[in-house]
Length: 517
Image (cartoon, rainbow, N blue to C red):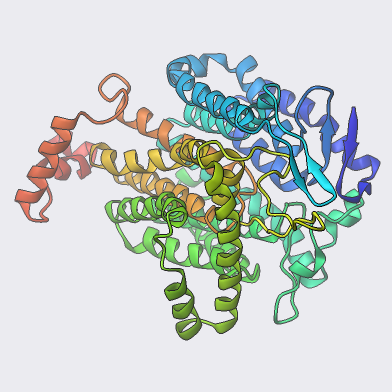
């Protein structure tokens, strides 16, 4: 077995942490009586604590980093110790299509890229059928496993509260390390594991401060995770829940007020922490998302989530077809926002155009891995391109087919959330449901400018789909709301001219009031 890292500077502790993590996953899943809490905790702990860019290379298998190892062994632990939940979640009936389609994409990519590429003094070998294993298995473990774990184990509003509390607790416990790197420098990964996971210069902000990374792959990965925690905290606050389980809060009114004060304080603390991370995009997500969660209703939140998710899905396809007004966007940013940001945006667009020009040559199945999709200097053979967005990585490496599969797995639950919201009853349930749809859409949208640093978007998307089936009932709503019933509802909504329908009013009335009547 080969072990390597950035500059091969890792220490023994980094190897031990990654080596014993499978045992940790199995032990936690074995002892846990609440698997939904254990799964969320293990996913977050693997992203936030394990060493980055440390690769275990086993003979004949793809490279395994902390994300691959964690996702695989969490799935194995869930399958061994909580197999009955997979049967309840209709696991076998729903997994086969994306699994087979992903295999089809991997085989197509390997067969269409058998040629040898030569750039100056360097050459890249062609792919063969066995390379489809190296393409398929990482996708299966990194995207499909988290998606189906979320789909299988999160089925109710209580499960959603568990997921949100795990996000909040993870960032709250992480915050002392964040403040440490904010004050001094992003050096914890270097001090603990022996090497830096990213370029130090990119952590320095224009005002001279630092953007923390702690043990995560990039400062942007930490900031988007903090934004999700902020949205989760304000969702629980708005829904009348607490950031912890707090069984003592049900004893009397004074203790409930104290639990509410803790919830409000935590929400504001996480908001301040997000501002301190110095990430403009994540700050926008947090501010606008919190405003929607706190001041808008669930219906408006789901509508916004649908628009955001559709934009994220359509942008790469429109960009590949030259239908995006790039120059107009750059001019608007330069005149209305900031000339420096406009210059950075223009560089990103030019870089995307070079990568798209190459991706269009093999648009359906891409160029495969081994850096075949990069743009190289024809004389020196050095790479000339920088790949930022997850969408351009997918289009270049795997083509349109795989892009539609990966993004479709995240966008489809948001679309179904918009369709199914009228059939979700209960104020608390509707708020949690709509907030999760909004968080999923934001995660998908963030994959347009950024690289998708972990499997959280697929985990949230699977949880959203599982909650839909769990809340609506599998017997009546096996896949989607029946079309005639959906059309009849929207016809009644149109005739009501914005007024609340009788069945909606009855659904919002407290259960005790309905019984008394």
